[in-house]
Every structure is written in structure tokens, then in C-alpha cells.
Image 1: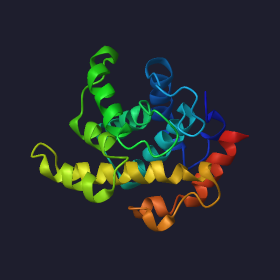
Image 2 (image 1 turned 180 degrees about the vertical axis):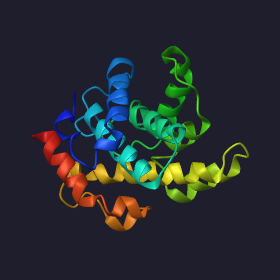
Image 3 (image 1 turned 60 degrees about the horizontal axis):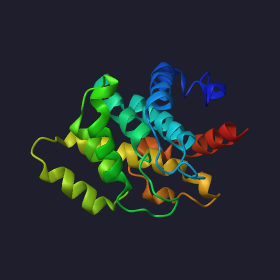
Length: 189
């Protein structure tokens, strides 16, 4: 299993079993459109999954909220067309999730849909769209911020200056910058 060598780390231990469950789900069920990707791979999604779960655990989110973030992580880059900006891949991935969730015995979560659909957009737009939906609560905004931070923390795969730490939205994410570097190093080793 990818990242198995790091799951005994004290930072990972509280979320290790949940990570394994969702990683296995992704491996068995989530198909990626851009199979030649070098940057937006299942390994990237696995690191985002682990980082999202760690942040969620540190904040004290519920199992339901952690599952929402997990679904977003494993589906979020599945409908990319290229490794560049590809604005709109989040919405395509959200639609893929919406079309296929019933096949996998997972429940549809509107928060997951919105987090995924707007993860590739500017926060002004993403947060505005979330606030427009009467069905979504303030909680969805927190999930969006956690997810964007988790995805952002894996930007070190783009190079040593891939992440602008000033763009992180949560205190917990700012404390995981060194861990994210370590995670990338261990996943490449």
C-alpha cells in the first residue's frame, strides 16, 4: 500500500485505518482520465487524503466530515485533462463522483461535491458558491479550507518553492509544512 512506510508515524497513527480504507477504495474504484499525468496521480491524491485526514483529526471533525474530505481527496483530480491549470477539472470530478457514488455503496454528500467542484478555483468564487447554497452550512466552508490546504501542502512535488505558505487557510496546515515535505520525500523513497 502506498505510504504504508509512514503510517506508524505518530502524526499519522490516529488516521491510519481511515486512510487505508479510502486509499483501497480509490485503488479499486476511481478511474483517472489523464493516465499519463506526472503531477496529478493517485499518489498525489493519496498524500492529499492523508494530509486532509490529519488536519481534520487535529481540528476534531466528526467521522462523517472526515469521510466527506476523504471522498473529495480520492476523486478530486480524477477528471483532469492535463497537468497544467485545467480549470474545470474540479467540477468534472465532482460530476464523476455524483454519477458513480451509488455504484460504490457510499453516500452522496453535497459538501463533498462543492469542495471538489471548486477546489481548482479562486477562493472568492469557491466560497461565494458555497455560501449561495441554502443546503450547505458554515461547516462546508471549513471542509473547503481544509481540502484546499491539503491539496496545497502537496505542492512541494512541483519543486522546493511549489507552496506559498501564506496561501494556507488553517492554522493546522501551517504546522504541517515540514511534515508535507517529509511525506513527499518518504513517498518518493
